[in-house]
Structures are given as structure tokens and as C-alpha cells.
Amino acid sequence: MKECITVPEPGPPAGSRNFSGGPLLPGMNLTRAEARERAELITVESYDVSLDLTRGGEVFGSTTTVKFTASPGSSSFIDAVTRTVHGVTLNGRALDPATVADGVRIQLPDLAEHNELTVVADMPYMNTGEGLHRFVDPVDNEVYLYTQFEVPDSRRMFTVFEQPDLKATFAFTVTAPSHWDVISNSPTPEPAQAPTAMPPGPSGRSRRRPGCPPT
Image 1: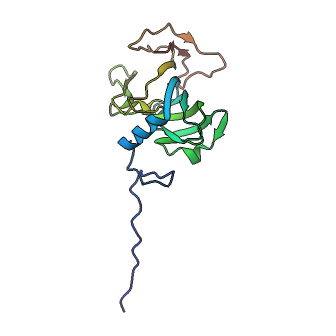
Image 2 (image 1 turned 45 degrees about the vertical axis):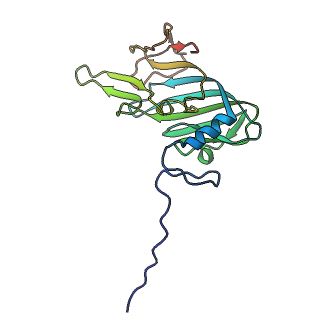
Image 3 (image 1 turned 90 degrees about the vertical axis):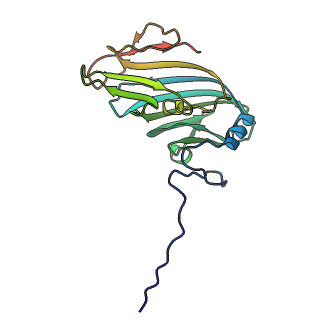
């Protein structure tokens, strides 16, 4: 007797997304059509980014507030390569991260003319030179970080409309161990001690918080 086996239809490739009923999108890529459509809908005003670099060697905290205008009633998305999304607040309304975030994009439904979005997330350190690269020097056993935002890798450090024609100002606040130096290619203010209500970092050392003005 011959046994008949039904082979299921192949599913979408890993990393594909389909939030709006449109065609499946491969992996993390932004298509030219998506970039053009988003640029027609959205004008970005500013980003306020807070980074917490005291959470160990796997992830860092990234909280981003974005102000932007959009066509009222439209929907779009913002880019964020995340390990965990803890909160998404759009115009004072909490969105369910499990529904709107897939680890690469965050869906933004029912936009107003003037919008404020806050995303609280953990993002992974990279060791490939992308995003926020983390390295432990085997000689002095100290941690060194640097950023590489070759398009499209700023989305690996903070939530962003990751395309070059959507420009805005940026302000950064960095919470880091007190013995670290935080250096920018823009004028960097003197660091201040982090609030005493904040616990010490994993090493037991205190934290410092330099904030960079908008650029």
C-alpha cells in the first residue's frame, strides 16, 4: 500500500512582515516605494534620545521621543531594531508592543496632523561594526563603544524614520558608568551625576549623564 503525504504550502520567508494586508516584505529591507510613500506622509521635527549604557553586556536602554507631522488619519511605521519593546505611546495613547512592534518596525496607526511618539526599548549591542558596537579590550579589560550609522544602522541604537530625506534635529542624553568618557563629534557638555534615585550600574560604580544639545 502506498502512503500519501500532503506537503503544506511553503510559508513566507523568515523575517517577512505583512501588517496592512499588502505584499510581504523581505527581512529588514526598506523598499524604494515605501520610502517614497513615507516621505510624502511625514515631516519629522525632532528626536530626543536617552540611552542607558549601564545594563550589562547584551543590551542597552533606548528611549526615544519623536515629534513629527503627518497626513491626518494616515498610518505609517518607524524603524527600530530591538530586543524588547517595553512601551509605545502615540499622542498620549498607549499601543500594545506585541501588536505594533516586530523587532524591526513599529506600526503607527491613525496619525494626527501633529504627533508625538515615545518608544521605550532594549536594543542589542553589536559586534559587527553596525549600530552601537561593543568591545572589551583584552589588555585593560575595559569596555569600549562606538557608533556606526552607515545607512540604515541608526535604527539599531534608537527609534528613527530611517531614510535620508526625513531629516530632523537630535538631542542625546547618555547614562554611563562614572569612569567612562562619552565623546561626540559635536560639542559635548560636562557630565552630571545621575539622579540619586537611580541604582548604581551592574559594576557598582556610579553613573554619569552627559546630555548633548540638539543638533
